[in-house]
Image 1 (spheres, rainbow, N blue to C red):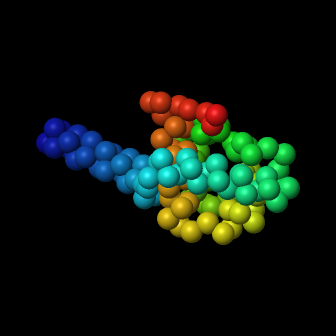
Image 2 (cartoon, one colour; image 1 turned 60 degrees about the horizontal axis):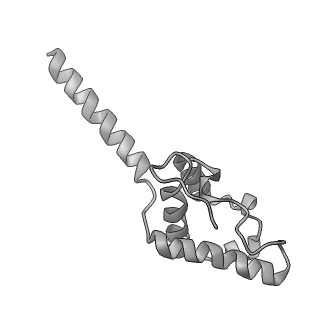
Length: 113
């Protein structure tokens, strides 16, 4: 009986943790990197930021941190509100995938260069 309860508890825990991780759809990380840089290039041309380089690097947050940012759609830390407001859900998904895959706690953390 204890083995069955333990097996069910393990199954439930694994199911719950994967549903949290895959709560947001994954997109194209290469396209996301391009789009992320493009947003800041447009923002720089408009004069809203001092550099074409993105303000936040992918390793600025953990994977959980990026998930929270994109679930709540709180892009205030990114600046360039006008540009972020114009992005479609598909583009946001691609950018999320890029940032998530190279977050500080990912197997391959990366910085924008």
